[in-house]
Image 1 (tube, rainbow, N blue to C red):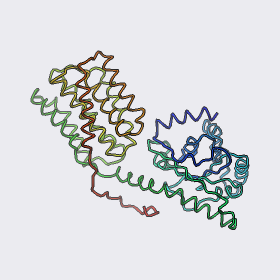
Image 2 (image 1 turned 90 degrees about the horizontal axis):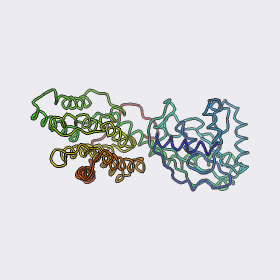
Image 3 (image 1 turned 135 degrees about the horizontal axis):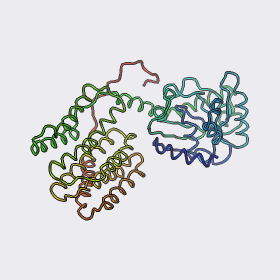
Image 4 (image 1 turned 60 degrees about the vertical axis):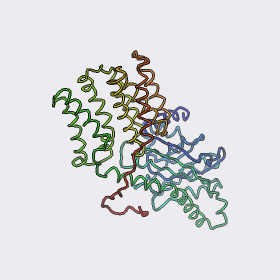
Length: 432
């Protein structure tokens, strides 16, 4: 059953998240061990299990086993139920001890519940350390970062995020055997917390900083957002003398100003703003082609879909990386339009230039999902224009796409050096 469920979970997680593993070699390839990790999300048992070849047997809330499909998936990964009511967990502990003594991996979350704020709870339960001491099995700490932002306890469904699971060198219980049993349990639990939090807290701080960034006021219209609509509106008005034709360009500029002054800022609002320059050009380009008697581009819906797919991985990226990808797309569309007007009047140019620029940037910057995004975008750029009848006249448009990538690569956006103003709210603890 696990052999069937694991590939399905891998495929699902690849769509929803960018996740990586480090230190898998610290989990014993055979023999008993206790794996103990922080517990920021609903995803944690699956995240830890997918990172190792052996099944990890987790204690899980008994109510979860009564949920259709979820209960079957939990059992497939070797989880077993625990009654979380006070004084009712002895049977589950005995089951965990028997599994360890049989040479299995057992997973325990010392917090006993999902984290309320992203870092480890102030009070940890001693079950993991006690189990390691009583059986002599090594205690393997693990840190999960990014999962609290992806699927915290208060959100019913997950959202895209970058997740990292790091397994730390095992804690040998023999090093604590000379101490009194309770003192040894306390010392091992403290060492477990130290190793987990050493790599957890930088991620927690990054999450808090990102939350502040998403609530930060929107910037003034950037050059690559404002110059193209102004330039195209000027050219179209000079050609047509029609305010109706250029009205969408000025409406887009009005949207940029409204975002700066009126629209409350949050994550989705910033995503829409960041992607809007490419969306505007794809929507406005037909009016430009009609006004200047240029051939209409076919398969426009296909190009819009592949552009959206090509920009999707940047939901996981740092802001400047994502904005440079957008800048490259804007430049590719403008350069291809210019090539169509003055050099190679094929209607297929943007179908090559835009995805080729995005493919080159994804490959160059190793963005999230680049191993999938770069070849798919490149295949679209090469195959679709040729399938629609394009030939050597497409070469200048290929040059336009690669030039757009090169310009963004040589002159990347610079970070905003203005300090972030943190929202007025109580300190959350741990000096954050």
